[in-house]
Length: 482
Ligand code: FAD
Ligand code: AMP
Image (cartoon, rainbow, N blue to C red; front, side, top):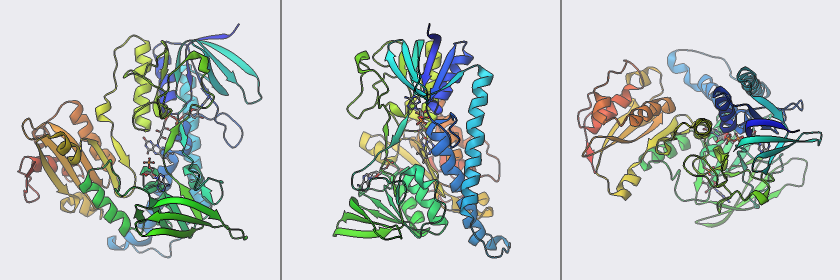
């Protein structure tokens, strides 16, 4: 007889492992199936985020940032250091250690919560069955009252630059370079392209980013994206907009390089790189995941179709995370995992899709929540703008980290906060304060009347809120009303 579960989760990325843990906390007998193997051929939990996404990329961003600081930003504090050098394998080794620690942590959480972690590839084989193919080829069928599909996403391939794992890599390969490429090409000026381009540029690569669109970071408030372009270019990233890659040729000699062809406003161009990162987005991973006879609907882009509670068109089958609509972000998937678990337990939990924070972990960070100016204009909303530059923040100056600004948008009639956009050190943590405020429908005045510790970077949030109502203290007031 097959093993019986209340809930079987396929995939142990942030959406899947969080769903599994919450289900177990709610008293459901739960299994979580994961096909990923580590270098020792052992099942490893945590998905893209922990293994090859959020965490390893931030580890390398932090290491490379420290290198830049040590190289040229300590003098100003009076700290003299000798010649600074970079041991790339040691940096990659540190990253791997953090990944190992966190993925082991998920194993521990599964044990503590009594989630059955099962290694192998899961397939929804009936409305209440998941067939698991173990790595030795043996099959086991699990019976499930509820199934949560959380198989995530994989990098998109483009025919003009097919990944070969050596000269042309995807984001996963770009986390594994053992030496700094002299000339690095990056296709795609999205979040992943900019973060990974920054890592290697800081370590000495001459980085060219090729982006097909004319508009830099189209989802970001224009004032902020303009500032980002200025700062990142100054840091050495050569970001070519309107540059569509049309082909690539690998060198024949012993020295492995790749020549990339692209078209821009001046016509056909080419450039040679030692490594090329393809970072043109990710696609939902649904390959061989569901027996088509079950009839689970996908949308035209291959995402599993779900309602606002992540239910598919088949009762008791849910889908969460990167393989359903919405931004491909770990925290969005985690909250969906919690929502589905609680819905299975007959609670009325919802995800507020209007308040999913976005972050680009360059330095300075870029983070935002809610509407930007362009969106408010398009919607015909009357709004006030409050901007506070970090150059006027005592804490930012003390830290010698004063690039960027906080921009807060509030409804002109009600003063309710409509959006917050930050480029600056710790932007992710600063914007989070406004995510909380917006969850409670706060007004700019509410933030203005709140006491902020001094000196702290978050005072910039306070001042931007005051500025939105025309009475910032630490900057001249040029209240803009639209
Ligand atoms: P995944 O994390 O992709 O996990 C899916 C899991 O399912 C995988 O482990 C896979 O092996 C498993 N699986 C698939 N099919 C099967 C099957 N049939 N049987 C068993 N197991 C299966 N997001 C952020 O929020 N912040 C960041 O800073 C950030 N940085 C990123 C940096 C990079 C370089 C990349 C690539 C991504 C980054 N992301 C970031 C995105 C984030 O990683 C994803 O949004 C998140 O991992 C999605 O979670 P998920 O659980 O839906 O899927
Ligand atoms: P994101 O979806 O945020 O990861 O960003 C991926 C980026 O890659 C998008 O801005 C795309 O416009 C860009 N892109 C996709 N295909 C190409 C191409 N052939 N040449 C250059 N840029 C591309």
